[in-house]
Image (spheres, one colour):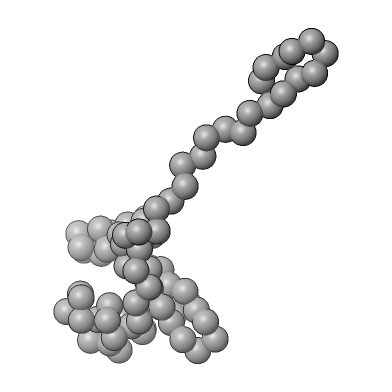
Length: 86
């Protein structure tokens, strides 16, 4: 905040915007190919009853994934170690 005379001016804090350059929207079939898993396993992992659901976007009946996103990367790191979610 800067004060000049009687008027105080506020500067917006610099907020780091996420870069979307590395994020790619893919479908369940493409994710299955990239992870070398069956498509049925991927779709089952998006269900709400899953212990550690795969982060996904839902557009009606269509399921999409943000390849390169922080959420999917964290999920992959948790699953790669074979650990149960905390």
